[in-house]
Amino acid sequence: MSGHHGHDHSHAVVTEGNSKKLTFALILTSTFLVVEVIAGFMTQSLALLSDAAHMFTDAAALAIALVAIKIGKLPADSKRTFGYQRFEILAALFNASMLFVVAIYILYEAYLRFSQPPEIQSTGMMIVAVIGLIINLISMKILFSSSQENLNVKGAYLEVLSDALGSVGVIIGAAIIYFTGWMWVDTLIAVLIGFWVLPRTWILLKQSINILLEGVPEEIDIEALRNDLLSLKDVESIHKLKVWAITSKNVHLTVHLLAPQADRNKLYQDALEILAHKHGITEMTLQIEDDECIAHSHTSHEEEHHHSHQH
Image 1 (cartoon, rainbow, N blue to C red):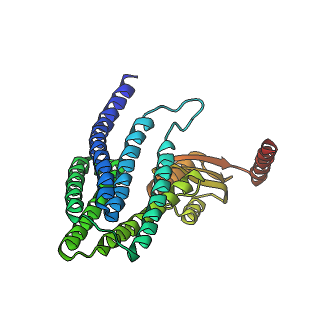
Image 2 (tube, rainbow, N blue to C red; image 1 turned 90 degrees about the vertical axis):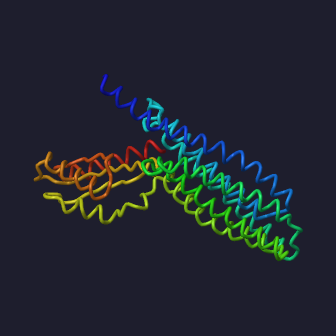
Image 3 (tube, rainbow, N blue to C red; image 1 turned 120 degrees about the horizontal axis):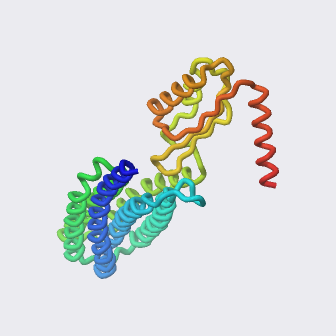
């Protein structure tokens, strides 16, 4: 009991450190986000608004990482046997959906502006973009050490890094407008940021939906996995192979192996080894069967039961 408590405590220290860093970065980003939106409307700069939309994803990514750490610590209960891990995926889906709409709106607004670019206040645009870049660099410094050991924080770090590039784009745009008076450059920068954000948003949407639909995770080659299981000593056939993810990093597998001649313990250990080391799956349920008739009657009985239950 005491050993278990010790493990929990050390884990809490790690996530507590991450939580503090994420919270600080989130406060910085959110505060500046509000400033950037107001400045975008005041200076008439679509590039600033586009960058603010990008900064909103940083804030959302930081918030998701924070919530995932907090909620991920909640224990599983009798109603939610997997715990609350899926909350992270729901939050990511919400974030991606909102950003997708915002990015489309910015591209539409840019299309309307190309024919008649408004008067841009390039000095204000430049000042805000420089402050934004400084805030991104501070956030990157805060998150860097944790991003090396925690994938959740790494995602947030990459968001902030890409937004720093967006701020650099706005600074360049503001300088060009200041020296040349080419107002259309603002719209061009906004479009470039929009096109930079859209594909990444689309990928996040696809990944979130795939997990919620219990799809096979992209990094798992199901055919290679099937062949590896079939190549195990004494395995005659396999059926009911299912692979799905609870979160992006928590992959589960269930499978029935028909192996009448097998040493069950040895087969179990071999399967465990190949799934963990070659395919990175550690959460699994293996059912080893002796007789094909039993396997098939068990399968059809289960499907019949499932059908009547659904009906």
